[in-house]
Image (cartoon, rainbow over all chains, first blue to last red; front, side, top):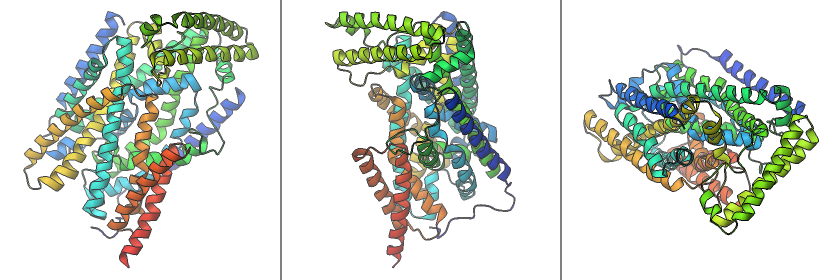
Length: 42
Length: 546
């Protein structure tokens, strides 16, 4: 049994912050567009 | 179905089996069989992960939901991108560095064997049931369309899939998934093309959008905060977040796939593919269903799409009443089409209510006459369109896509069931020091055995109601609580094995109580289960140390 979890990030791992932000932005745009379409064609 | 369509389906099935068997090379060790020697590229893993989610239930049930209610089901995927980010930061590096075969193996490293065994057992129960349902969904629909018996259809789906999965292992699963994703997406775009071409024959796309919008089918976002409502923005963002954290982070059928990736970075890339593509893909599926609705505004649809009980109704005492409803339906349909053609929105909405009301009466008549209280036709809408409206060749492609979706969803689950059985139980608890060749042999037998079990469950589940929700409900009873254990393992240093185990038990009890005694919608069960496990787990951990 290990008393504690291992580290999340280690040297050598590629940072993917840009990709994470892009995924969330894409989702926000999709939600906004869906809301807009639903409102226009309500 | 015409001869050429059948040829497309048969060529596809043969190709899948042959290609899957070809992938069995390098599977002379358990690590090769279950994890592809941890050598798969990210795009293969990513497509395989998505292929597992696009089951035949997605093609049949989700297009049916798009037809019946429009786009709102997409909200249940709004928690997915954030879940993928959290999992990329947490469990992907944890599991990969721990060099585990199953997600639950990690829990023994962190807590104890009891917690590992309990979570793996819960996975086995939930996944084995849902695998049966995953196979039952297309079997029920295909049996009606192809006029096969349900056992024949189940075998037609299961035999090729079990063959390539049990012999080829996860490599066969992943590489066939890639091809299956291609055929599924291609056939969906083909269906959309045929639908738009058919609709444009009568009206422009702007008017088609107004028709769909007038009946609420383009209202995808529901901002109400009502826990009794199944699909709202909030249940999707919060409940969906926990559902997807559980599914992708703690379900061996997903974890096994990114454990097969070449590296941590490749595992993360594979999950992020879903973060970008999953919601647009779901919109494509739901949008296809909404387009089918618009299409059938101008082309006469059957009053009910599910013809399972037609003969019984025709020979019953209420046959005349049913024929009367059919006549009313035809008149209401004509009035609806006339209103839609001249863009009379109020007239169209009124006529559509009349059409839906007659359909509801007909459905009730079928239920009363046959005693089939679960009778519904939502899963038969899209297959009816495929077989009656798609051009020759494309209909075969769509049916092949339904086979592809059924097999890609089931094969990954089958391989995961086998890996949990052998790694977490057989090798850990019963036969600890056998050779790798022995475990490989047992793994193949376990895969075939679970395939047989799933066929039996599929036969029992084949008369369930709305199949997609049945599958999600099975999952929700277990997912949130298992997620809670992983949160304890990964996010805290204070939790111990005693706390994790009793937290898990408490989570299960609370979720079952909530599910059976309150109207709270099932997407919230995941959040409740995870929260109870976390709080009880930490409390018991603190008490047990004193």
